Image (cartoon, rainbow, N blue to C red):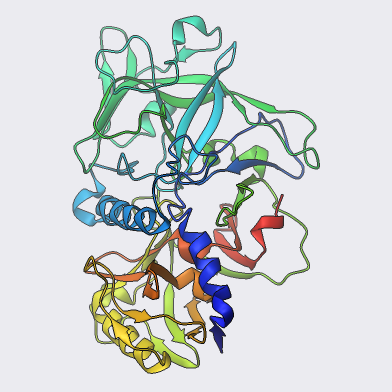
Length: 450
């Protein structure tokens, strides 16, 4: 039930993983769509991949990991109950891990946004800018698009916004949005309809890019904060009514998937798939999505966790919130996995029993437990027992080298929010069915999922 660091092979795999450990900022290239029988795919490029505009060859894998840790800690704040009303469609502005290329308007203008399963409304910076953060790509100019349409106050798209996030310009009878983020970043602008052209389609699915007319998005004229200058805004992939996947629901039959990998020396990309992912002979395991507020987030129920053969009931001895339905959020935008802190103490003890290696301290004092690594080190398989689904995580999903000859556990405690992060999701085809209200996990070599 354990995997071995024989000749450091697993350790090498984990190092490769860390090189792209921000698994929330890959480049998404969307094609345009019609009624699609099988779906279409787009590339996801990790923010630390050589393919990313944020890539820095001067950063070591260890530096990238700690940067990802800090983004995870910042990002979790938007999920907390005290933030939920204000940041309904939030992403910590500098905390996104994946980028996504889409084209907007007629003629199409390429824009780069943060792809986020924890946000709904897609928004980009627009001309004219009352106040905009610096971005390298050109701003979208709605005046130059023949397919741009303003949304009126009281219309369906306007009313789909939370009441605290929408404003009506009575003089122009136009709907406006206003989002504030936990790090004091913000975006404000007009709610509009526009033609989206989504990426370059996979030739095995669709021979040409696909376009969707009249998609709701936010045209931001006043934006500021800690957004990266390589991007133009946020692409919402959450579960709320205005997210891209919900607006495309009829075309993609309510289905989308992603397969995340650590980039190797060939700088391969991961995949995001709209529609039916694939006909696979590999057995999937599926768990229900739980309806909770806000509807943006993808909630599932975690019942237990096993360390090797030792099974621990989740929430044992902790607050009742840890054992209720929908007690954990699946999020591709958070690198680490967060678990309820009182349960975490039991998990940490089980790890110490299972790992025959010297326990050491993280030099930065951030992660625990950590262990001295050598070529004969055995690390346990850790299984997440969701309702109806057992997901077995390999060592590269749960441990990371933080310096030479030291590995640390990448699942961390949280006082109030549990999140199943993207490190834990690597090398799984994670498939969402928004009509059947389920999410499934299929063990997959994501380097071959092209």
